[in-house]
Amino acid sequence: MRWSRFFAYTQKEAPKDAVVASHKYLVRGGYIKQVAAGIYDFAPLGKMVLDNIRAVIKEEMDKAGAQEVMLSFVTPYELWEETGRAKKYGKELLRIKDRKDQSFVLSPTNEESVVDLVRGTVKSYKQLPVNLYQINLKFRDEARPRFGLLRGREFIMKDAYSFHATAEDLDREFNLMEETYKNIFTKLGLNFRAVWADSGAIGGSGSKEFMVLADTGEDDIVVCTECDYAANIEVAARKHEKRENPVKTGEIEEVYTPDKKSIEEVCKFLGIDPYFSIKAVVKKAVFDDKEEIVVFFIRGTDTLEETKAANAVGALELVDASEEELEAARLVPGFIGPFGLESSVKYIIDDDLRMAEELVCGANKKDYHIKGAGLLDANLLGNLTVYRDIAAVKEGDKCPKCGAPLKITKGIEVGHIFKLGTVYSEPMNATFLDENGKSKPFIMGCYGIGVSRLISAAIEQNHDDKGIIWPKQISPFVVDIIVSDVKKEEQLIFAEDLYEKLNNAGVKTILDDRAERFGPKIADFELVGFPVCVIVGKKLKDGKVEIRDRKTGEKFEADKDMALEKVMEIINR
Image 1 (tube, rainbow, N blue to C red):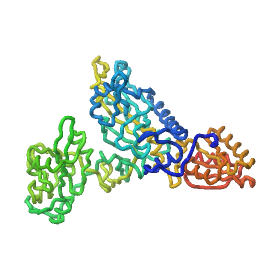
Image 2 (cartoon, rainbow, N blue to C red; image 1 turned 60 degrees about the vertical axis):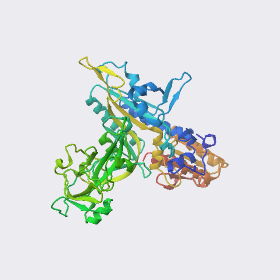
Image 3 (cartoon, rainbow, N blue to C red; image 1 turned 45 degrees about the horizontal axis):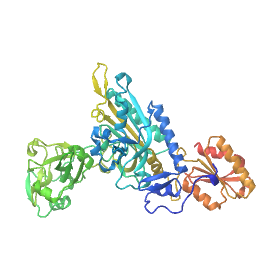
């Protein structure tokens, strides 16, 4: 491609609402153009990047035995009613009606559609397993679309769905898809981690996310400093360590703590390490058909992990409770503890407090705390005491797998795989006959990759203050040949010859033959992020050209007769 004929127009200024590098550089580099909030057109450069990513995904999915389909973007609303997700999905599900007043949705995901495709067609266990995938448009009506392609409303996604006769076969496919995803992200040249995760609105049991590591990531990832353990903060676990309180009380006693409500105030007042205190976090749990006040008890040095807490009680979400709601539940803010609670109050205790001794906690009485409390005797708490892992892992906690220190880093979710089980097949009556002729619901898996999101994630991980630094597998062009002065026939002829040789060698190359000054040309090369640049300029008369490696910043001169060889060396590193 010749830049003089290419539909590529760079900009000096970034959009005013752009706060992350990928949003700024994609717009400035002429890759995308905003149409509406969270909706973008892809210019030729952007479409080339999409195609490069798509090609890698397709190659690996096909290699794994998955079969490509194309499901309709506009989906009958009644399919979503079958699974109950029509109500659960909320306002992010864009509902529309046609001229006949029939209801549809713009698909944010396609579990219902693919089950409808398979049910009635696959009738026997002999036809299983089946893995169907598509790379298609999706729409999710985000309340606050932001960060360009990272959180848009319209997006390109690879979603795959597998159907199995047994849970064991689903496990096999889940593991195969995990390896397939690792191959995909490795081929794309990305630094990533596969982490255990929460299944969220999709449902199901086993779940892993694939995170591109980047400082601008929205997700906190817990990783071990020694082994391969990694998990989203929402599900991360830690090794429990028993520490003995050096302050011995001898007996449980109520202590007067006037106006001391916070953990810091109480522990300072009593001379107690906050580790040996119990913090009460009160939330209102929201269910399909009701709301309920729940008290979560964790160590004073911990914080509540709300996704874990919501899962512990089976709630859709947790929201803050008002003072009036606390009073109605007969709770005393600032002095809530697990002993002596009203029998009607539902509560969960963090696993780390199981069998703990010598603790300080609220006495459920204004201005009083309990000192020397222990959780050894379940009878003190009642027979309905429930322990769950509900605390957020902290930097420095011990790895549950090897015991080494854990650290917290940032990541951008670009892929997610789920073991769905029968969450969708049962309500949609999607069944097959097993080897005994018995009708059973399909056991399913779901595997997604954010294709358009990968573009931004790659940039967040690969950029500097000048622009994008594409991995060569993703870059629209690998080599940019800049003709310093197109009026100089010698420069133009040499550049044309090198351009032809690189293209014949299968290297995607763009020839910058614009009648433009050298400064803007090199600035465009740095902004759009092509991996290699060859500058054909004044030194050509001395038999020299300049070669630049965008990633390393390396610049060096090469004999013009060795230019092709030197470029290939950089590309093949």
